[in-house]
Amino acid sequence: MRIASLLPAATEIVGALGLADDLVAVTFECDRPEAIRATRPVVVDTALPAGLTPAEIDATVRERAAQGLPQYSLDREALRDAAPDLVLTQDLCRVCALPASTVAEALDALDLDATVLAVDPHTLDEVLDAVASVARAADSPAAGEALVAELQERLRAVDEAVKDRPRPRVLALEWVDPPFLPGHWVPAMVRRAGGEPLAGIDGGRSVATTWDEVRAHAPDVALVAPCGFGLDDAIAQADAVRAELPGVPLVAIDSASYVVRAGPRLVDGIEALAAALHPDAVPAPPPGRITALG
Image (cartoon, rainbow, N blue to C red):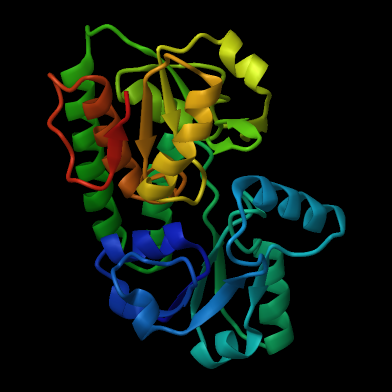
């Protein structure tokens, strides 16, 4: 089967299922499996200019949305040349990836007869369901069942390690300028890692807030997890959080890989966060995932 993945999380799922050889098109953000962008046509790119600060990104996204402009561009000719049988996309967040409606319109215009699967989980359980759904759509249901079983077993191991332990009050921030409170699966990640999530919306959208409201929650720990950014950028952006939350311990995480991408590495993120919150109960993760900043 020829698979075009227009969503980094879906590309990662395909790779984790052992189906990377079936990928015929990816996005500019796809980095798992490693080096996939170097070997496959990139058919989705960002419409945002490079080098913007978090505040500038927020302003640009809002301006483009108000004008009805897309946040991403689709290379229709490259997609046509890829001739996919299955196209993986999403409708969860127009800021995060190309919407399924745009893809469907493009396929119609290009006269491509491909199945379109929208990967739209809102909760952690739905992320696991999405893994199975992609596997079924790719005619590999057994691989999906095996991968989901492995991920569930790892989650159970974390549950066992942190049960009956004090649960710090964790305020996760998905953006720092302006501050955004988390939604979707992030509160569940904090909970499974042995923390008590503050102000997040299980299964809902992340929402903008103010620093006064952030401080009012009186967190024991602040998790700096800026959407789409890696660990180095999260550490750098933690300075702004430290200035607003003096005295509150901070933890920075590679959010792009382990928090906002709805794929198998969410379990890596839970394991990493559990180790940061309960270092005497959970083994430390590999370097580059998470850092306790004090």
